[in-house]
View (cartoon, rainbow, N blue to C red):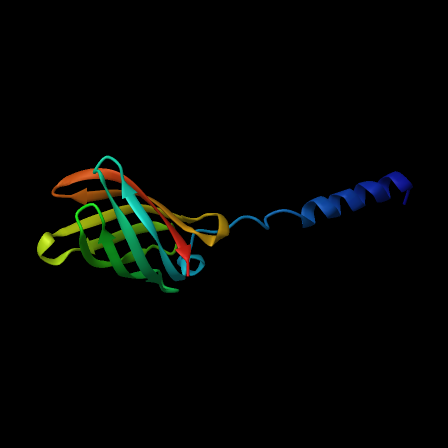
Length: 134
């Protein structure tokens, strides 16, 4: 084998063995953990805090605070294992419920990031959350 062929073979091996290390798949096991952080919906004009746990199966349970309205509630739902789709409900008891539907991804420092549509009082508003692992 010539020197040129050996160099080409080495370059091919190096290129094919590298890559993919920074890619995460969107499945609930990658989302499992305990999180806390802000949520906001600028079009709705409201924001607050979420504290939750996500199980290996993608089940979400925790609490939510709407600091704009000074109300607290439960935050429950699911992240679909195959797609990262978010479906959750904020239940504020006598103050009603809001639904969250959207997508979840991992951000830098393992943050749990979401873009969603929040349905409040029959109207839809965009929103985001950025939750830090605890």
